[in-house]
Image 1: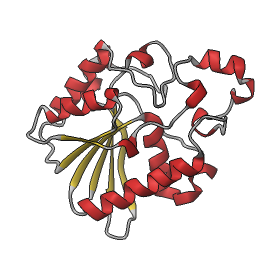
Image 2: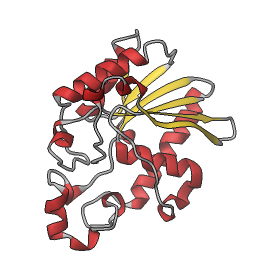
Image 3: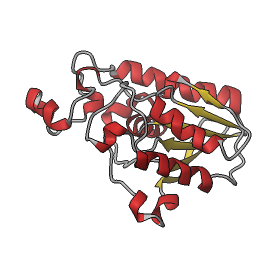
Length: 212
């Protein structure tokens, strides 16, 4: 199975430095432009299915890909962003004022009450990989998801349930493409991570946003 993991385009929250998690924000004007460029870039990719997170910023990005082909976007809540509870709708500065102990910690795995637990995130990763292997072996699949979840899923593919013990070195930019090949045994091979060739020729379309 060839798996293309794609982060959504810049959202209105990304634009203003707001942490999203499960909060639902649409694409910004720039995000829509990024998504259109992504759709054009992937127009020649022969994919069998396109799945999207159920959050609007991912769905709008997935639709831009689907517009270039006859496939229907299937929403999949399992690949939505990590739930960040009390952090959602706030800037990182605001969050650190209330939780100064998190200055050098990941918000994705902070353990703060109301955020998604590591156990639940792990279970989602297990379910995503299990479902893909069961339904789509030997197919080419596009998943439009979120920076935090994609970075964790990649780490899970390397380390399984031990992923929380590993540093996640990945930068997952808006509309970046990550290609992973998963063989019949479940072993993953990483072809490339955070590819943004569709934006590189359009400097005004690039962003360095990595907010969740």
